[in-house]
Image (cartoon, rainbow, N blue to C red; front, side):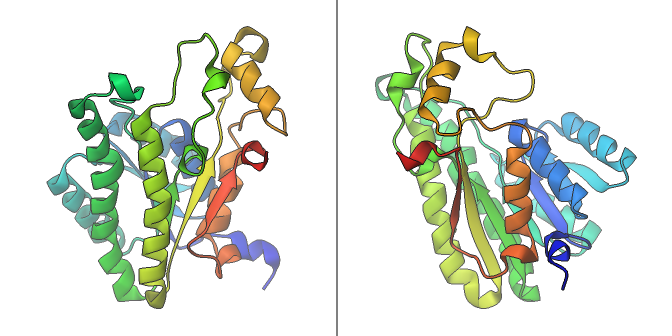
Length: 265
């Protein structure tokens, strides 16, 4: 097989949670450009439909569906709708994240912690649980969890300087857990030919984001990163398509670190 064909996703059905968000929009776009039918899912269904319409205009196959990871019945309904419409889910990208309640330890309250975990932990688990039976029945599937460098390292608080920004404790807790869940799922469902991997991106500065010279945090982050920059709009695309495609067919249980060298110090 020609090596470029290994990266194609033709005939595959992919679900992307948080599919119209900062990283989600680029993930959805990359999968669609690689040939997949993409179901763009989040609570903000209008934003999802806007992106889906744009992708359809470009010749891709994309649809928007509402999904609230804080609603167990809604999760079940979403999976049922997707399977009824397409007959299969080949690729699940667990990308959605709630940033409610992200604060330093002494400012963290039970309500905020639980609200975030309702989506980041429980909701992600429930969606994966709902999708896996159809994959297991077909003896094929691919799950990619979007973690973070906060899932392999502790936060480097000095980079925040006097900005007043921080990295919440719940976020680090959740992202480490997501990498652990990735390995559990990969080990358990390997015999069913279901591959499970995660991606741990570093900091992301979207097009139109703050200029380095005008932002203390950005400048400190850039200085500490070997490649001297944050991730841009395209950096996530190749990583996702690689793990979603046959190009990585012998890779499972892996956490792909995409951080410009941040964690190599």
